[in-house]
Image (cartoon, rainbow, N blue to C red; front, top):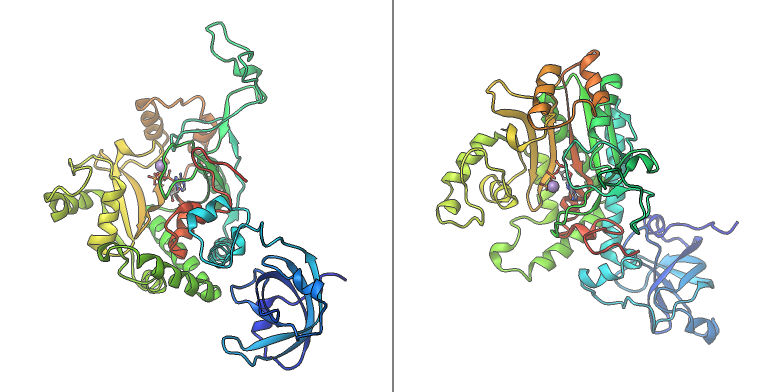
Length: 480
Ligand code: ATP
Ligand code: MN
């Protein structure tokens, strides 16, 4: 059997007592022709492999270069050196794959995140990205565990959709028609999508919500966790063209139930990472503190990463209505001194991310749930409130990130839903299947969408969303 190895993380948790083991991994450094720092991706802590002088041929030692892959068998003994508890005294070393140190793009030194983005195919071999992607994994696992424990059904909603009515964002077209001008045309000269693969115009999904509602009104509680696409040309540190979203949808839920679930959910997955990925989070906390040293005092976070996560776990999210938020913003010194790029024009305005961040970072200093937004700035399916001007929407805003969750209680009353659709020009005929849930046994229901990468950013403290997804897709960039 080839792969009879012990993971370095597992090995480092044992006591060194002369046991014989085999490890496999990639060389981080090789010092004095004697000490190999070996890493296998299970932890940032390297295993020190000790090569006794004179026991291995020079030709072999020359091949132990940065990022060469090795299989090493030996005995585990207490380390004589400082900095590690054990050494692996190598008995046999096999080079599985050579790595030309002259050509290998990553040096055993600090590289900038921008540089590593251009080497995204190799950046997993660095400590920062090792930690980020192990935490990302843990959060994904915790998400499934959370919903599974609560009896939710994991639903896979389609990635290719024909509905363009939701309006969550600009869409990418999916077609097999030729792009060279020979695509079949209608009499008016427009493209005849009846001739296209699906017999109609289709796109990549911007959200699985509408289909999620079909599931919730049968299973009670469902969630989706899948890729989502938005062709929005926004080059920010919080937007990707391809990102992952978790969208739970619950029958027999009102807006308050929805907020309660979202808050419990966020705390649960943070707690999971705190319990299972402590070492990685501590590494990332140190990294962030280093990074922030470059910033002017007033731009630095008040809390360290671990402290911030603990604070979120131990405090209730602040809940307030959109209307109250506008009042706070209007009355703020920040507004009076005209420090917002977009001034507070009054009730009805859409909040910009600077406004959201002011509420979260300066005013409340904790996550905030804003609810009951003006109907005019929210989607058609959100439940109309008694006041005739707001809908039962809620957004969760997180420090350093801004919007992390968007959700609402859905409009379950068919007449109200249809009149709203007609009012804003959404085709009732096209969404016949969606409206059937309201025709046949409609129920109060609610749901939300959590942007997975924004959550990973929040937990890892990474400032750019491009650094928490393996291969980011953003305007002008889809390499790897
Ligand atoms: P924003 O105002 O930040 O663009 P949105 O209002 O478009 O967000 P929703 O349509 O409510 O967002 O999507 C639900 C969640 O998906 C958001 O709360 C956010 O966490 C995430 N999200 C939205 N757009 C993106 C994107 N382009 N890249 C990464 N995550 C996103
Ligand atoms: Mn958006």
